[in-house]
Length: 472
Picture 1: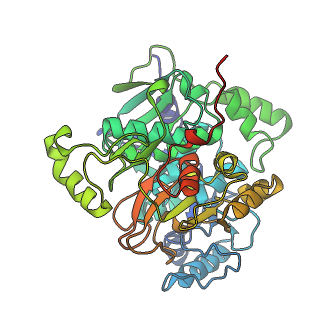
Picture 2: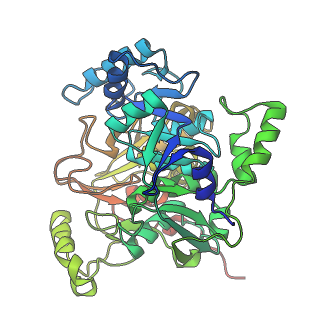
Picture 3: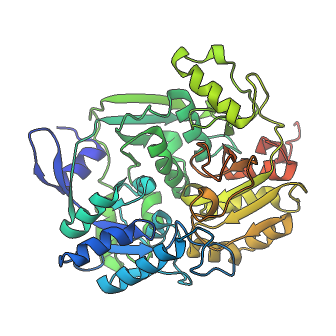
């Protein structure tokens, strides 16, 4: 019987099935971070239970860490140091590898996991963070869990999961210059709603997906949870194999060749059935930006805030409340809205390709005088690679702060915030009230849109900075 990629991953990890359709799934990898990981880890250790053998568990400092160059345990978050120190203590007790402050591999969990090849095609991966689904870009079954499930995952290497339905998002064509995977994700959510994924396992497929870089695929799968999906997946191909080759945890030599051949078999069979399908065309996607306090409040940067009467009646009150918070009126043009700050980073858009895209616009330019701008690489590996290319100097000379790796101002947890009432354009993944600080107004966009807007001092289509093609 033809099987989907998700079917194959589920069946190869199902230890036991149950009458309600759920299954006990074996877990290949668990990644912990300091905000919740030490709690689960301490509970397992204090009960006298054993941790998984070998290198199945890693830990990092990312959520509440200070990203200033002079970083220390003393974050600006009240009590933040206790999270860091507890993670350090419990990781040492457990004997697991911790990417501590100052470690060259420290960074955001899902980015570090990919940097190292800790997660490979065909694996299962969990982390007590909702954006664990990022690793689905490798053809891995990856999803976020809570602290109690994390404890069970550490103690048993298994979790019981209700089997989700399946959705295929098929994208024809190829994205236009200046349009990114982030724009595609925002277009999908704006078109089909932030609940459109319905806790389904989403496979992203089609010519436009195959044309995406691995970094673009990571961004797309990262945003699957913002579509309310259980997970996001992209079937492995030669691009995936090339990405994994040579990474620390990847097989070597003949073992790699054997593994790669198996990975390329992880594809949906022709004729396999999905519960739903959404079809998009890449030509319909343009640089996007959010206007409200949910990701389905999104539109083209060159578009308008929608009129309330143009929205479904059930969503009008929510939209009106969002616009009141954002200080915008229906029918207002998005391009030209003044901004106070710009942020590039996060597990969504803090990779090397993201920094290159922003730097390409910033090179030789300066951020508007009234705009505070920050760039936070997602991992130590990304930061070193960017610095080797001189990207750090491009950002600094343009007026950006260049930071150490971490989640940083993706959210208000490290204690650092933008000014109350500030309007921020951000390459992050969420825009709800207070996400980046009390009363801060967040417009989510791609790194290129963030860079263009920082230069102009207002929301701006990045294509305005592209060299104009002369008429033949």
